Image (tube, rainbow, N blue to C red; front, side, top):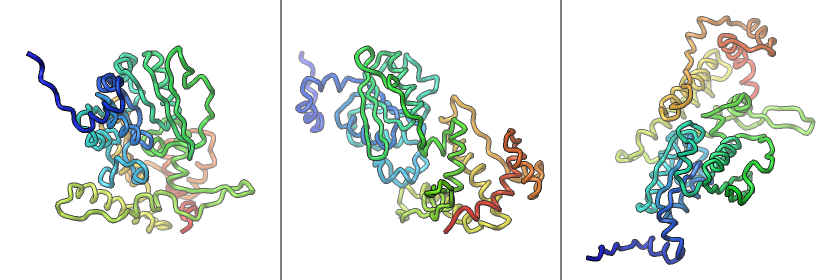
Length: 351
């Protein structure tokens, strides 16, 4: 008795005609895509429509409002959700025949070892992080799995096929030390001191460099005071909207940012900005449990607790600030933050 003949979908018939002898191999392939951002969204769509049998997606980041202008798999209702999980859900609609697995995790986590990489036929890099790209390059070489490396800088793009023993690898040529850093790294997963410095400058201050090489305040607002999250476009307010809960969360955050902006120069300003940055945002990150499987969970700070244990006053803050070559305690950091946020921030942001 002959086995039943399986009917091909219109998409599968098109792929079989266009891919020819490669169709069978692609359909049985198990591939890994690292990164679900600007490149990742476009790449995942292409992989799904091409008909790769099984696709694994790894990304540590969550979706931000600023992503929506180019990362088309994401919508307004997806803000604050893991990119990998949403990308799987959105891309799956293009071709339900493809098996998709999402991992909201860091590709450098121990669970993604050499044996895990070796289980794939092909790996695609869609990263904006130099360190992570180097790590994937090393893992693919160790596992002897072909890697297709891609990246963008401004309007320039590059792609490189890396096959062990047949082509140069990602680290064969020296790479320039990055002078800019991905927003997702700065906001959610800082791993180096420079990340914290850039975060403070981009989140609380925005500067431009004049021709005389001096820094001056920019005339547009920085993120916590500006348009990145608090001036959100109109939402679907219908009662049957499945996004109602997420829209309400965004509205509450927008109002919180507005209240911070309105309180600049007041005695309440240090508390409001402290609780937004060091309490509310940290609690939001802590709620993403998958992110902390293999790393230490951050601890949200309490303003009142630190206020009781810290000295305050302009003279105290000034004396601490002058000791800029020593590591400050948490209490000293808190003192300087409260003193300087009242004195510096209102003058640093020009409306």
